[in-house]
Length: 416
Image 1: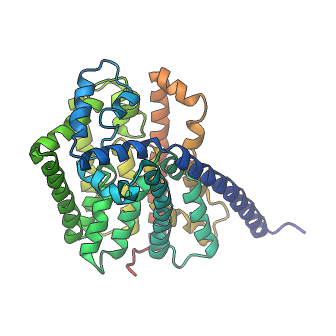
Image 2 (image 1 turned 30 degrees about the vertical axis):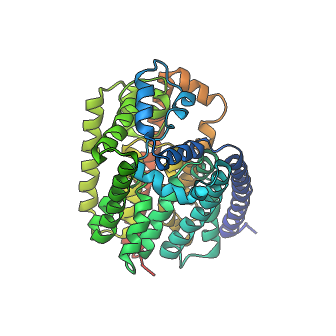
Image 3 (image 1 turned 90 degrees about the vertical axis):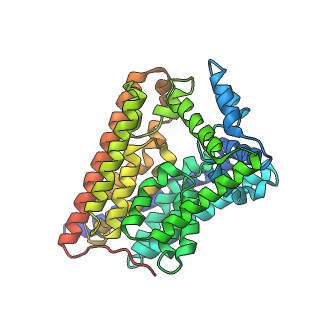
């Protein structure tokens, strides 16, 4: 008697889930340990927030250091305002999650536990809106993908902000039809990382969520004005100091060039590796953003899940993003999970999706980091390889959504 193909698939699925569970829970525990012991970015952001509250201008301090130091270092930058590229309003919004700046140690612990809550918000929001009819095992698979992905690991270990911003983006989408003002407050927190949220502004405008968008933006404007008042300078001067720091760390090939220009995954990083002039990089990036906006508008009648997925993919493609920003790609899971729900015996696209989310942990291990720092040619190959991986992921995503639409299984975005 020949083995039942379905049984073989179920056994393979069970083994795969078991292996992924063990790996994910181990990585998650390791990330929590790192978040308690290290979290260098959180400590730097904490310092910047503290300076703003104390009436010091961290951006001007950083600019003076960068302009007067030939070989800038992270240690030097830490003592001169911090390594942040976030606007002042974002640092004010982070303060409640730093235990209200009660102490650096309490801030680090509060930030870590806050990130665990953000993971729960992300899981709940996507599950509630897109996976409510899916089997329990599919929801469980989604959970362990979130816990084991390199994006989650790096957010926790570095103390980064991507989980916070994405969690409040999802919360804004969940609540927007019931309470637009509260949705706008949540969206203000999502806007704390502008490069991650910029295309989602356009998404909400396409969906005519004007109150949500403008509430979020107004909160940032008011906070910047309040900070400028605290520093006893004009709002324009504060904004100018902020953008000057961005320019100094990205437009010039400084000693930290690797980290602020090309260590992320994006088309923009490739242009910097190829030594494009800054004006060319800015112009090309603007063209890409405009093209993305046009594509999103052209697809405005598509399902929300499709449009959100395309927005997430283009967000990663266009501008500088390190691996912790891959959290936005969690939006793609409900589409790829249809391979399991539809009885596909070989969920190739889903496996590839998992591979992309977990792969950075392998590529950046051990000697890879040293090679990146020492060889621009190797870095270029690495960046091109990653770009091609994401292009293939985007093609798979569009193919799956197209196939589901034709089969009458189009997934819709439902507000509870």
